Length: 127
Image (cartoon, rainbow, N blue to C red; front, top):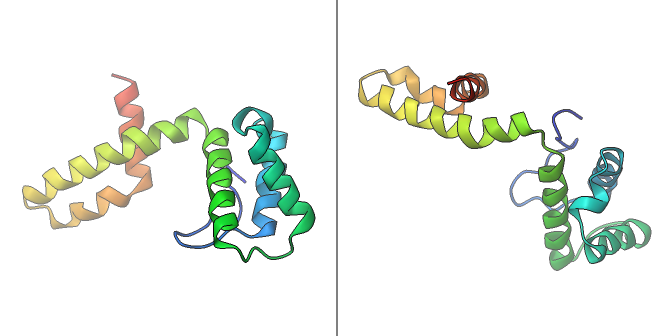
């Protein structure tokens, strides 16, 4: 696990698994985020699910657990990764659009290039 990311990242629409919830809990406890990021009800829901459920079948439970895991992942994210995600990615998209308008067709790929987003975030912070 690096930069606050949990193993087995979910795609949109995928419901969380018990294994992913256990990994999220373990990682957040190690980083001291479990008690800071979640309230008592959220912790209790996650703990009871881990103790009592083998397979998550309820759509409502899956939605709640997904929100809890997203909250944990956000809390474990480093300041630098958050900076790249918020500032770097948006700058990469803007620069890419401008370059495409100027005729650079290959610049379309810049919007999704993480390394370019990192460069732009670092350049933005070092003004």
